[in-house]
Amino acid sequence: MRILWVKVGGLWPLNTGGRLRSFHIVSELCRRHRVTLLTTHGPADDPAGLAAALPRCEAVQSFPTRTAKHGSARFVTALLRSWLSPLPVDLWKSRVAALQCEANRLTAAGEIDLCVADFLAAAPNVPMGGAVPTILFTHNVEHMIWKRLSETEGHPLRRALLEVEWRKMRRYEGMACGAADLTLAVSEVDRTMLAALEPQSCVRTIPTGVDVDYWSPDGRAEHPAHLVFTGSMDWYPNEDAVLYFLNAILPRIRRDVPDVSLAVVGRNPTPRLRTVGAQAGVRVTGTVDDVRPHVANAAVCVVPLRVGGGTRLKIFEALSMGKAVVSTSIGAEGLPVESGEHAVIVDDPADFAREVVRLLRRPDERQRLGSAGRRLVEERYSWREVARRFETHCEDAVTLARRASSPRPVLAPSTTSR
Image (cartoon, rainbow, N blue to C red; front, side, top):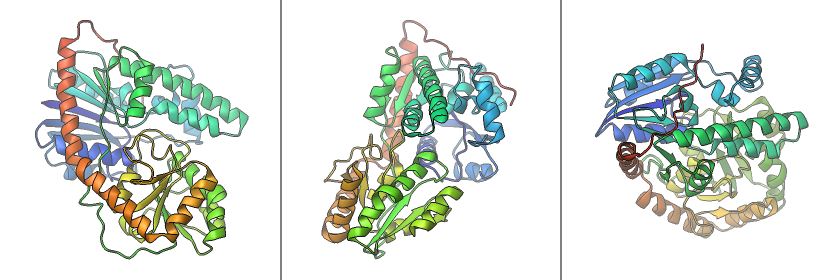
């Protein structure tokens, strides 16, 4: 099969959960199909490294782009301009003219059997609902992220702006699901929410995976009172989770375990996070060459997310390393883990602190949870197994497009001068 894979927002280095998921599936698909990858790169990305890491790809094209950061003058300008468009600001600034032109050329030339729009941000750049069957691969329910942001925002003006944005995102997300021949969600929770947006859409699930060989126990001795949080710290839900943990949970843990320590491991922490972390006496590492030693050193991995969507790879990575995990419901949302069996899932800050303390005091329970988690991902969620399921969905999307009794609504690419 000739597959066109479109991903806006970069793909290399593999420093976010979304990049990891996309890269491993593309890499596996290339073994049996002709895959052309169109993506973008910013100043910190490495397009040459991406091409070298995907030698089986038919072609890898990456287009330079500079994304407006939240709070910058360019972001404010994009926000104002997006108000005159049906697109929410995050999708407005995701339009890339050169990538859009190449996607249109390839699909119009009849050189593609299937197009995959990877993340909703790719949708404004590809012809959905046209002659070429399309899969919308959603790693999150995007409007729910914005909705949860609005619910946790304390400033009235920012809350009002977020209210507008999440409603625009919900509308466009429903349109995109309706235009795609098949939408793939990363959890049953996400599938249910997306299917409700557009009753005529076909939405199925694809599980999250993990590289069980890379993320494996290495025999390193853990520090008995050490905690770790991992994730891209320039993604707001991760920063919010850490700040929430430092303010509402860590002080409770310290009352029972005074010598507890915490490492916050992930790229691009904001000055605010560094300042609050220093005041709380925790280590904020910034970008590291290898996350695994930091996970291995920890007795417990904490995932106190209050905002987010999709599924968190950080939990599967920790489980694959045989680690005990304490997470909120949103942190573990969509993952096939049972609380008390593979991880501990609690929401109240007092309960969260109590469970962390319990695990710090009980190495046998940490070992039991870690072993069960490792077995779970080893047996069912390797990337090779996940990619096989994705391949089946690709074949089904082509079949669904051929059998469609009436054409789907067309979601044409949004023109841009960027």
